[in-house]
Structures are given as structure tokens and as C-alpha cells.
Image 1: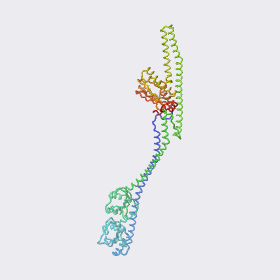
Image 2: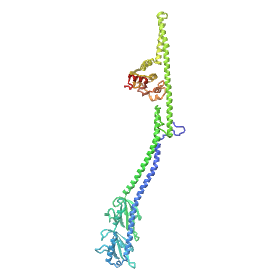
Image 3: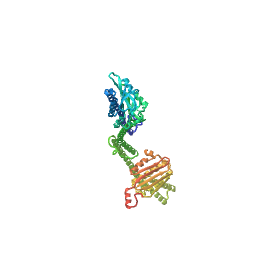
Image 4: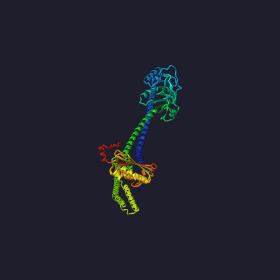
Length: 600
């Protein structure tokens, strides 16, 4: 029943455990979300750092190339003013150019052409005449009058990939008289990469304006081949620098960065620098860092959640479970449960102390009721005993004496009519029988004079005669010393059980079994009647007449005994009582050695 004004009604509310779990999860979800987001951002930062690596490498290559070209242009400009060059002294110029390529290893060759494209000087000896009139670098230099770039070729003189740049030599009138050409080798970038601290399998690829591969650090066999069309078109159409992801010429997914290199005199880039790092390495590093952070954060969160759950379990749930368990024990009749020693502190501690106080009050009330019930039963039995003695000693003896006197008078005088005297005699005999029956019902003398077994046997015979069901007494004949209070209470209980059988059971057979078990007496009353619901009967006072089963349970507990009830509707009933034997007489038995108190 809901408390007045609490507004809960019959709502199906979650358990306290569920509430605590929800609170813990709410406490964990927000920090876990923040930490997961931080780990994700750190992963993105790792990916960004990897992109910066390839961008920085591409920038360094571009800067090196621009510095190299600036130096080459200045060198060609200086050479154009040498008298030997102006006089076209091939022998001197050849020696001069040869000395220059020895001191500049990144320069493959120096070549001088006249205005018609005919070669007249070379740092590397020439075996046959050459004409460069059709070459891109020569045409651009002549047409623009400025420093110009060429394209990828395999040098005829050195038989290796080169890219050439041309510088026009002008006379005082501004006419182009010669064109100086410098051919650059790109192999020095391989040495640069080897000494750089770059991720494994980092690639560097250089392309000319057509997309032909000039240099590849991983697979030199690709030199001279065209780039993947989709990648090269992307770089051509894109800004001067950028990044993208894709599978390169080695079909390995990479993160690429590229930069375009162009001369001031040319609109089209003369070279593309592209660097790449394997996506697997980037992902592995980023994922490793990401999952490491996730694992650490998850473990930390799990530890916090576990600690919170443990604290809640120890501080709340376990105490509530103890209170619930104790409440169930009390509902089953066990009032000796105490909880305050195990549930302490705070509101739950107060609840535990209140629970113990309630149990103490219930025990006190039960003890009072049990004591009153026992006192009432004992007083009733004492009164029965007193009445029985009085009926027997006074009324019974008087009637017996009257019968004797009448018999004597009839023999001596014979004055009364025979019929009257016979009637008086019959009435007196009936009175005697009634008195004896009443005496047996109120307090059977056999209970005190012979013992419990004989009294129960007589009780069974009377119920058998009066109610028609067969009563069988089974006694193991072992000594059963009982205090008078115990003996009287057990006799009353058996009589009440037989009354219940007679009124309600519709039984044909009843068995009363008396057995000594160690230091206890076990008495069982078993019938084959219609049975009953034992749990329901225990909850109902006065069921089956008398004090009912509840009264029997209370009285036997007052004697430090116990009751076991096995009854089901349609299957009869089996009720067993255990009561302690008299300790004083048991001690005498032990001293005399007459009986083994272990029950063996």
C-alpha cells in the first residue's frame, strides 16, 4: 500500500541496483566521451603530422632545386663574359667546362651551342657533331631570350637521365650569339633521402612538364616512364602545392604532397616534386596511438566505474540485501535475526537499528503470548486434575458406597421391590461410569501413574470407539523421561490433533508414533485423510479448533521443542513434534549407564 501523498501508486519502479547503475553510467559516459573525442583528435593530429612530413620533404626538394638553378643561371651568366667563350675558343672552353663539372658533382655536363644550335664546346668530349635546334630548352631560350628549361632525356654523352637548362649569351647589340646549356643530374637527391630521418618507404618522385619520371628513390626502373595519368592531371589542374591520397606507381596507398617548380620566364612548370608516405605506416602509427589512448582511457574509466560499483555495493546494496534477507527471515518466524552489527552508518544504519528494535519487541510479545498460553494450559490441566480428584474421591466413592449399601440392604431385608432396587442399582452404576469417563477426559490418571505412552494408547482407543477410525500406537519402548509440563503439553497437543482428524480429516487410519531420538522425544501423528494447506492454516488462528496449529507451534517452542508439518490437500497429513527429555533424569541415566544418550 503506498504511503499517503507519495504519488507512487502502483508504478513499476526500477530497483535500487538499477538506479545506482544508471548513475554510475551517467558519471562514466561523459568523461569517456570527452576522452574518446580527445583520442580521436590526437589521431587526427598524428595524420596531420604525417602530412606535414611529406610536405616538408617536398618543400626541401623544391628549395634545393631552386637554389641549384639560381646558381646554374648565375654560373652561365658569368661564363658568357669569359673571353674564351666570346671568342669561341673550343679547346679552352672545353677544359674550363670539364674543370667545372669536376668541382660540381650535381652538374652532368656543360654544353655550348651557337645561335643555330650547333655544338661548339662540351665539358664531356663529343665524338660527333650535335645540333640542339629542335630541343625545348634551346627553342625557349632563343624565343624568350631568358633562362629556359628542357625535358627529360637520356643524355647522348653520359647515357643517363638528365634535365637541361639553357641560358642565351647576347652580344652588345642584344642579339643572341650563343646558348649555354647546363645538364643536371638528379641522383644526388637519393643521398639526401638516405641521411634524412624519414619514415620507412617514404617516396620521392620528380617529373618533367610532361609527367615523365625524372627520379624515383625506391624503384629507379620507373625513370623515363610516365606518371599515372589521374595523379598527374590532379597535380596539373591543382594549385602550386597540395596533398592527396592515392595509390602511386608502386600500387601502394600513400599520402602524397606535391609542389610545382617553374621559371620566371615560363608559365608551365618545368618540374613536379611529389613525396609520399605509405598510408599503412601513417594509419598504423595513428591507430596505435589512438587505440593505446582508448585502452588506457577505457581501463581508467572501468577502474573508476568498478570502484564506484564496489563502494555502492559495499555501502548500499549489500546492506539493503542484508535487510531484505533479515526481513524474509522474520516473515518465516525467525525473530533472532540481528542486523545493526552488519548495517551501520547513515540512514541504513538507523534502519538496521530500528529493525533490531522491532525484532526485540516481537520476541518480547511472542514470549509473553507463549508464556500466557503455557500458563493457561497448565492452569487448565491443574483444574482438570483437581476436578478429577474431587469427582473420583468424593462423588465416585459416595456412589460406590451407596451401591454397596443398597446391595447389602436387599440381601438382608429385601423390603424394596426388586424392580426399584434394580433401577437404583443401574443408575448408580451409570453414575460411576460417567464419573470415570469424565475423569479420563479431564486428566487421565494413566498419564501421571503409568506414563505418556499408556495415556495416549487409552486416548486412541476412546477416539477409535467414538469416531470410527482406526488408531494405531507405535512406541519404541525406549525410556522417555519427561518433565510434567512437557508430558501434559504433548498429551494435550495429541488430543487436539485427534479432534482435528475427527472433525475435518475424514480419515480411515491414524498412526501415533513415539520414538526417542538422542535427547529428544519425537511424536508423530499421521492420517490418511483429505489433508489441508499447512501454510494457510498456520496463518489462521483457531483453525481446526482449539488453539489450532499456531497454538501448537507456540507451545512446543516454549518447551524448547519444534514442529514439522507435512500436509497437502488430498494427501493426508503428517505432523511431528520434538520435545526435550528431562535433563536431570538424563544425567542420572548417564551416571548409571542405563542408556546411551547418543540414541544408538
